Image (tube, rainbow, N blue to C red; front, top):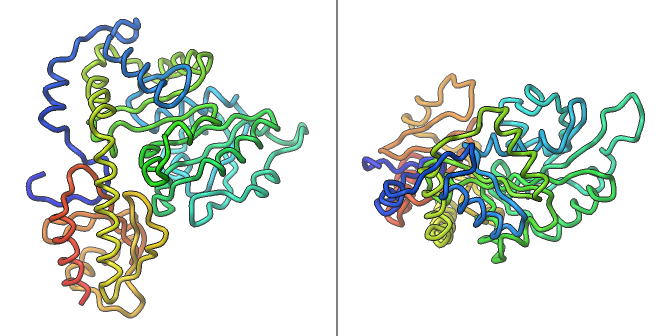
Amino acid sequence: MNNIIDLRSDTVTLPSDEMRKTIASSKLGDDVFGEDPCVNKLEQKAALIMGKEGGLLVPSGTMGNLVSILVHCQRGSEIILGHKAHTFVYEAGGISAFGGVHSRQLTNQTDGTIDIDEIKSAIRMDNDHFPKTSAITLENTHNLCNGSPLSPDYIKDVAQIACDNDMKLHIDGARIFNAAVALNIDVNELVKDADSVTFCLSKGLAAPIGSIICGSEKFIYNARRTRKALGGGMRQAGIIASAGMYSLDNMLDQIRVDHKNTTRLTEGISEIEGLSIDGESIKSNILYFDIEKGARRCEQLARQTKNITVYPFQIALDNIHFFESSPGRFRLVTHYGITGDDIEKTLGVLDKIVN
């Protein structure tokens, strides 16, 4: 990565030489016609891993969430989600803009969960004045909540609420494999009670593009039609799918390495005077830390963040890139492109600029 230690996001990963070779040798067909062998194989494998009847390749996680919610919700209906949910904060209001779906935002706890009683209370009664509550969506791991994994027991409880109220449960599982590694369980245990799940190939799995939606056969049939309407039907998409297959076959162990690097980064930051981090809450590949009130900030950092009103804002110090997510609060994300040596250099730079 040109000697840059890029901790902004796990979306910046680049394909390995072996992955590039796999892409170059892909057998292709027209996926809109259902004829791309690599896509078909990837969708089948993803469904098997997730314990669902079918899978569908989409260009991005944002489209995956949008497609799923449009299938679950009619225009004018309502979906319950957390106030820090990626779908609510970072997806351009797509569910409202394209689906006419009303969002009911409930408070995310620090661990990414939403209080069970609050979910129950938020479900609308059957009355002409109110939108119909059609679905709930959870994010696992939860980006804005320290990359926290949601437990299978919690997901089961939310799924039961959905079932009892004729609603659907969608899991935004962009980093669902990180959750599985953090909890040391099979990934299908985290989605078996959900009606649909999306997961990204282009984050911890280090593929260059693509996400997968999984669900029932009927759901995938409707999702395929919705994907087409949104412009997501792709022709010779095997060049994307082959990278995804390589990721599922070869990159899952990398996530454990990423978590190990995050643990070391967390420990190191906790030892730097002037920085504050909640080490107990860091369980995957995402961490947030703060500048302690009254701590001296280096001139470089102060100069870069002066008069900033739009966040996240990119910081670049000694070829180390990361985000300031809000004033004095920073996010770092480990991934395939980050080594143990990179972690130690980052800690050295942070110590230098704060003290």
